[in-house]
Image 1 (cartoon, rainbow, N blue to C red):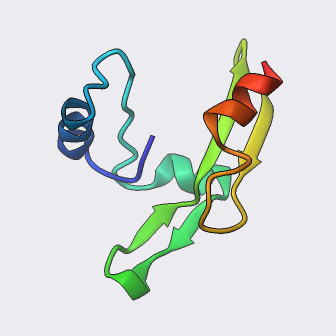
Image 2 (cartoon, one colour):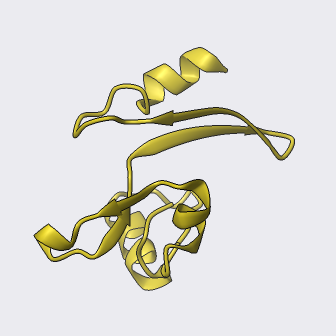
Image 3 (cartoon, one colour):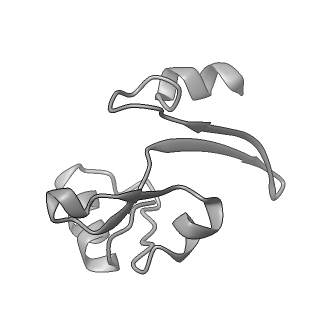
Length: 85
C-alpha cells in the first residue's frame, strides 16, 4: 500500500516482478489518514505520503502495527513481521 495511484502501483509491481503481490493504491491518502500515519513530504516535493509501517491483520482485526520511527527499515522489516506470525 502506498499513497500513489493505481497506475504507479501497477508499474512498480511490474518493475519488481511482484505479480504475486497485491499492490494497493491509496491515491488520496484516505486510508493513510484513517490510520493516523500521514507524513508531510512537501519539503521534498512529494506532498502527503505515508509513514513506513507493517501491519498484521488477523480475521479483520489488527494484531500488530509496527511503525518506523526514522528512515530505516527495522520494525517493519519482513524478518521482524515474520517473527511475529
